[in-house]
Image (cartoon, rainbow, N blue to C red; front, side, top):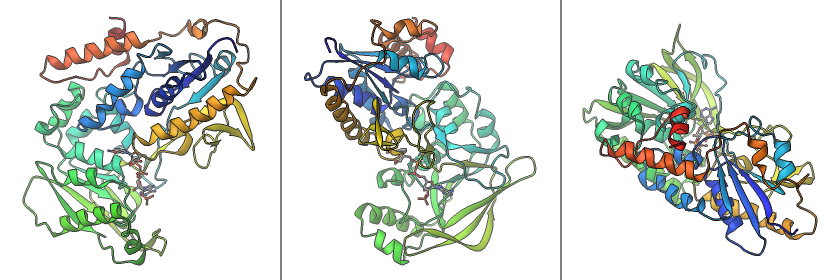
Length: 450
Ligand code: NAP
């Protein structure tokens, strides 16, 4: 090939950015990389997932931002594959496509009452408080004003984030980059009690100790271990041989010794409680849970013993789910694109020129850093294929640029993103903050155009 290998990376979250970085960190195979994102802003879950009060994790975006400065990398934001440009058109132009669009949908509980008003997905709430342009600014304003008691179902890190954001005092979040309307709604929130519901025990929770501990350090909220904290069963004892699990157990055990200190906000932990029904006439009035016991493998089984937790809202935080792209193989059971080491597989056969990285490759697990190793694995396969004569070739590699196919879209390039970035910093400075997130697509596009 007498020109650089043309690669499209679809998705600019950590896995996409790390893939672009790995592709351009070598000079054995010349490449040019276009990073395509349906949003006008890059960095995916670093911007719209990582909690705004986790400043050091959010600062990863400064590292990712430098990747956009590389001469062989372009950012094509506000371009939705399947809407602004089809997968077929991309395949016409690019020699290789790396799909890194993540797993953005919520998972359902599949219980009666799940669709009552007041029953919401954590993904929506997280999108709202991080200022995702898909969420209307007022989406949770009324919710927070009217809700006193919330159940958060799930004991992973997203559940911890949601619980913490709901339970923090205004002074604990007003330095963050949350949109102004979010800060104001949280300041006016009526939430006093958050019930965190785990269907298994403290030894099986997927949260990490550092994040868990933060719940015990809130200014205005105390943690109360309500039920199911016992870890004397065989599976929990075995699980506790793992140091990280043992640390989580110790944190919960310490909390269970704490006396009620009379603070006005409370985080209630319920373990071994499986949600079976959300009840209410016109909206959520309670969550019915069934006590569980764990088998030797640590799996939960219902005991038939149910009770009702009085809540006005239920936030389900039971994991994310990936979705299919037309024309690309998809594993409906695992909600990932089938692959071997990042090469997309159609049954037993690799699909030439098609690769995956990140959550849509391996499922919604791991921390940001996990995506670096994952992206490098995928890029290693892609570069090996690029070295094999004739393996990577665009379907019709004639046009000089894909830009003609994007004529109908308002593309935000890296310079446009930098203008958004500057506008957010200026907006923040006015209120003594580092940044205030701009949250509507119109305003983002306006800022991008300067
Ligand atoms: P997760 O860690 O997979 O947790 C999902 C939780 O939902 C588990 O407790 C799971 O319990 C529970 N669950 C699933 N189905 C359920 C059902 N039908 N009924 C009741 N409970 C159910 O997912 P996540 O919290 O969405 O986090 C996704 C990934 O992002 C994780 O890797 C996480 O560590 C990462 N993350 C990291 C941070 C951070 O580092 N600060 C912040 C946010 C997210 P079972 O175990 O019993 O299935």
